[in-house]
Length: 467
Image (cartoon, rainbow, N blue to C red; front, top):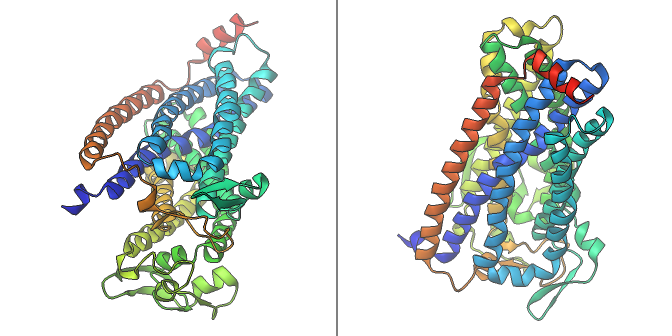
């Protein structure tokens, strides 16, 4: 098969596999950081040992998730040099600062105060412990900012110029505040907060199903449901802003998302199928809806792939029939479908977790919320595929407002020293090691959750020991 000998395709598959695995733990750790901080704030106000027990449980879950996330992120950094050497040379002047800042400012801040949460309950004041919980979450949000700054620059380059075949930084603030940063950061971070909220609701639902720790379960469900409904509603704003940026800066990606080959008022498909060979898309659609969302005008013509292929900025670099349009189309619409399930689940959770705890007796809703983290997980993964595959064939996209020449084709970014055999072997090894890591993490989560929050007398004894 050609795919087994294509170094560029195998390099993309390998990086996609490691990134997808890594980006399971990152959303959980950032999202659970907020749940953890809210729980500790509750304990600081109530001084109820049961709330301290809840915090201790979430510290265990957060720490295990954080550790696996860090470990899997390191391999991705090495991949820049090993698999994407030419890309690293091209963007090295841009990427050095945000990646270094992420490690020096965010990672160490998060690690230091996580140490306080793990070991410091009896060694620091309650106020300092609570502030540490919020600082851990703040550091994770800051870490996401630096990473998304780098990723956004790949999507919409700014503040650089082409010198000697490399992108050279000429304006740090223009590069940092590139056109897609704000929309991408708010959209992504809001999504990971949804993930954390749904994980918390799933844990609470498990305790309801097992008829255990109902007080903890109800408090957790209410915290999770509140965060879930707020972030789910905010997603409407953030997703719209992200879509507008894509329409303005990355027209080929927008055309792929809706399977648009011709320049016309673009519909919004509810579902459908793209015939890539013939350049047609069929399915149930709302005429002009994508144009309205992007421009505010139902009749505004958005450029199709056939015309974009003739545009001087993109012309000659792609043929519409060679693009993975159907993959981008399907992942984009799966993401939209998952959002509807997220919103529905959040509405049900917020309604029935308040007001005499009706959720305690609703087994069907408990089971739904137990499996509900699948919805944001699929939305995050398919959204990531849409964003990254949708910019092909570029690894650095020639955005509409980007400096002339500051772009790079994916095929030009790979390391020329790698062979397909080496890539296949390392891909197999990654799959084996990552499967082992996931099983170990899942078993640890199962043990923590089954044990539940500490017994009240154990918490009291621990707290008295710190007085």
